[in-house]
Amino acid sequence: MSAALKLARPEDLDRLMALVTAFHAEAGIEQDADQRRDALAPLLEGIPHGCVYLIGPGRAPLGYIVLTFGWSVEFGGMDGFVDEIYIRPAVRGRGIATEVLLDLPKALAGAGLTALHLEVDRAHEATQRLYLRTGFKPRDRYVLMSKPL
Image (cartoon, rainbow, N blue to C red; front, side):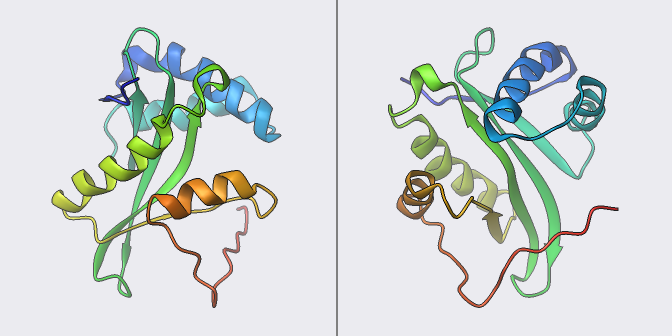
């Protein structure tokens, strides 16, 4: 199974919406379709703040990964955040997410990213093991905190 990545474009929005809707339902993220579409569309249109890659065949993607970009003085430049990664349940356990999380950071580093971050639910031990296997490490002194605006 190949985890080939395709940069998502506006014409991929409907396929992506189906995947994101499935992920949000699974993760318990409440967001209506208009909010979801409004959040995804600029990423597909090329805004500099992030991007979406479809994983696997473009016509029938196996999943997706959303990256957002920022700047870090601590890490010495542009950094990224894995906002969402999703693999369809029927193809999980085949190494697809592992392949993406090993290969994509190499390409991002080549493009100038200095660090890649993500968050994981403390109760999802299998997901934590995946992230550890792919080189992500917890930052013991730090806790991600958010303030919706």
